Length: 462
Image 1 (cartoon, rainbow, N blue to C red):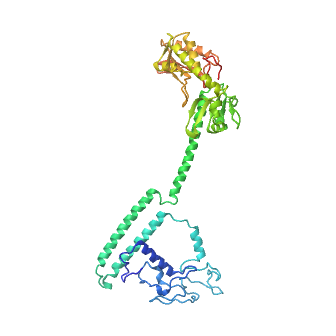
Image 2: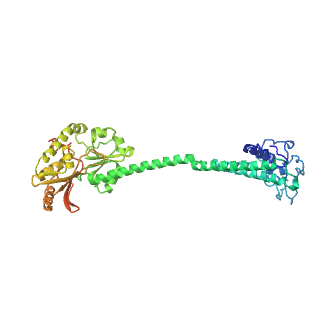
């Protein structure tokens, strides 16, 4: 790029022009490996006082010196004197410097002020590529500093020692300051935008999806483990103590840790049938193993469900006579529960809240509870406060009842407690105890899961 006598770049220059100038200066300072550089006649040496042309002060060996410079020559410096690079280099017996490569090495060319070209290439290969943010920041910084130096040089050359400034030079410097300020402001805004978007970090755009993918995978594993833990805890607390539970090895291990004896666990093997168990914990691996057979043939009744999607874990009751027999008997069993509930509600000794009464007429109460309530009401008055004990995420079927005392006497509740404890399977509850809710005593009776169909309809247990 042409420069005027004051060292100023023409007003229309751009950042691309500066890069071209720097490239030309570097090519004139050191010969490229294997490619001839521009001749000395094509290069005009800038003034010696200009700081941004570092390559114009020396000529490569064998190249004529620019006007105003002393010729260097090709002869090596004698021992004890500074060589071309300003280093006292002792030569061995063959007359070559110790670090000079052999003449037959094609990659042995060295630039002035640098090591061998091969070594520089290896360093460049091993160096990690800088991020786009760093490249942009460095480019803008160099461009701005170059502009400021040129403006300062323009002011120095227009002082008294160099004569009066040319017409319009003061206005030109002012305009250049404005251009620099605008460019620097735009650069700051660009850097802020890149920082916000994450583009200033190496691999920032690819690291976030990888982290999200990793976070997603970790989240899925955590959801599956949480659903498995909840299902195991529910089975340990709610399933009848005499029932056998089929499960995969992981769930069986958790159940055994929660206190279930190994004799109640049936670890599922590939290709094996779950028949022989009363309950199956349908983890993702179990659902994958049995497919549609799980709900159509082996375990059509859902008792509880935990989690969602692929991490879901279901607890199901196994139909000992198969899914077809269960579906055929289910309507009759529902009708029998509705009829038994309505019959109790018509008994003058039986009292229930409005919500409890609606649940009984809807057939949502376990058959064993209905039989127990009928047995109690045959001895004394019974007052139902609420029903509960249904499994989460499953069709409603209450296995728990809370009874209050009609006359407010704890003795009546104690008599009911003694009566239910004398029952035999399947009407012996899993738990029966007197609880105190505030100042009022209540009797809570609960049966274990699963419910037993066919008890009221006269059919066999399915």
